[in-house]
Length: 256
Image (cartoon, rainbow, N blue to C red; front, side):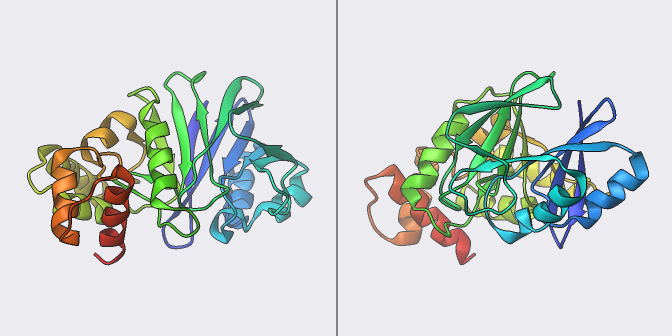
């Protein structure tokens, strides 16, 4: 299976998984890039994966379902029109016939957010939607800091070599903030330079790795003393719970 990206809107990525003349697509907020991809490749759209209900991830869903008669996997609840296969936490399913995915709940950004993990590819892969980003996490539109901490802790348990494909190109701003939280973290400084070079060539900074996120992402590092101290300095108070630390860091990022 080969994974490619399509650009949508100002900074969205639509992820394509292609194999043997067929493909699956993750979070098609706009149908137009998919039509163009099919025109250019002649590939058959077999499946769609939806991570959460926001329009920039679902906007093209109904049009694609109508035109290509494909299956669509996504959160249960019936609130996303076009979903044909409603998934619950830890439910498994197959994409392109050969690839077994697990859907797991990853709340925080939204309450319905799912992430999709596959370890039957040559290297484990994760489609994290808008919960986990390279160097950051999603805004807490519906969930709580405790929800987001729950999700971060789930990601931590994935294999270190898991490739992370998230929904937006936010990496440079995320790393700038991560550097403000941990200015002496050499891994962050290294990532800043690497991403700067990649983006200067107009290439995606993605995918990231779980191993990388554990070293640089302040939202996955909320139990590290340096991050706790930064959060306490910003909030000017003692923080006793890890979810409090994450909440302060997220508020700081929102106003950064």
